[in-house]
Image 1 (tube, rainbow, N blue to C red):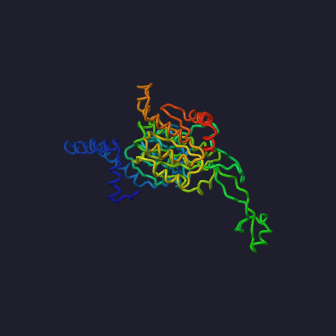
Image 2 (image 1 turned 90 degrees about the vertical axis):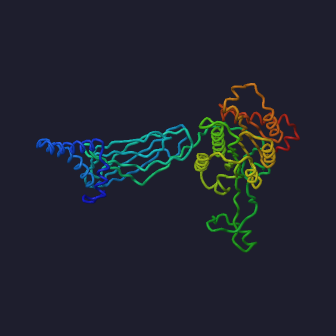
Image 3 (image 1 turned 120 degrees about the vertical axis):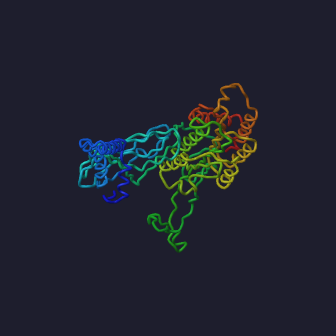
Amino acid sequence: MAADGDPTGWRTGLRGLTTRGRSFLAAGITALLCAYLLGQQALLRVGLLLGVLPLVAAFLLLRTRYRVASGRRLSPHRVPAGQEARVHLRVDNISRVPTGLLMLEDKVPYLLGPRPRFVLDRVEPRGFREVSYRVRSDLRGRYPLGPLQLRLTDPFGMCELTRAFNAADTLTVVPQIHPLPAIKLAGEWAGYGDSASRTVALAGDDDAVPREYRHGDDLRRVHWKSTAKYGELMVRREEQPLRSRATVLLDTREVGHRGSGPASSFEWAVTCAASVGGHLLERGYQTRLLTDTGVQVPQDAKSSTGGSVTESIGLLLDSLAVVQHSAGGGLGRAEEVLRLGGEGLLVAVLGALDDEQTASLARLRRRAGAAVAFVLDTASWVGLGQLLPGRVDEAAEHQLRLLREAGWTVLQARAGDSVAELWRRADVRAQADAAASGPIDRGATA
């Protein structure tokens, strides 16, 4: 704070006068004028007392030299939409003198609730105080918390000065994850080693021959026969498990969704993608998220295997927390990405489609081992489905039939449908499709 005699400091102190302080100062000036005009000595003393008291309070606050440190802790840092997170604040008095009355106010976006305010009466030297508050949001996103503002005030409430800390944190509100049942999909296989039962849903490395020694390899793996043959140190390759791969395709086109806010079809699609992606990661799939704009998370296959399942799910949720509508009108960019490396299980969460997009999805199915499509009936998100429960959209039915004929397991989703129940139907429908298609179609699927 500024020292006395500094005009900038005095201006800060005068601006910090509260309503009470300004009222006392105005009353004192008025009393002094009346005492001068009326010649009343008693009124002069009253005016001096009323006018000097707020000025003395401002002077004492400007001379105050508190050394206060603050800290913030979020529990948790990542919270699903609609659930609460707790923010813990800690204020440490690192000076040798006790503090006076402190008022704390943390800066919080309005979507998380009102700004929390706390009053700390006195903090002893080298002491600390801890307070906490709750925040909640129904909307996904990354919300900044802070910086913490500290307000100093005198015991009479005449003056109030505000100081802000620099530290801030970020709370990530992610979409909800619904637990999904374990089902068996057509074209899906999970195993280890270089089995002959490999399908297009799996990818692994051929480890049948030894390789050259690399720094850090275990010497117990040295293959002496190959070392003598090639004249350099060779080691045996350990048989690596075949990794099941999966791609979750999320349709973010603004023209393909209806509704707004948490009850829109787009938010349902994001929740569905989060639930399916988390479920596949927990089952051991090397899973990536792909949008219609061609953006994929993680960006390469190597980064998706470097962390634990919890870290992979966290990366997926962080990406879905900030995903927004795209201005695109087709799935061309996503088709290019899948053409370069689209083997494995493909799960698509789609909005309203047209004939061109349906043809693109039919082409994508040829590269996937198994393909499941959540096709949203977006009209039900704006009330049309309730107004006309018996309606039949012939164009939409034709597109769904084309996807099924191309080998997709199609699940039509309407407003209010459960992701877990739709996922459970994928198993039943896959078996029904396999039984109805005959041996030729089953061979093509395999």
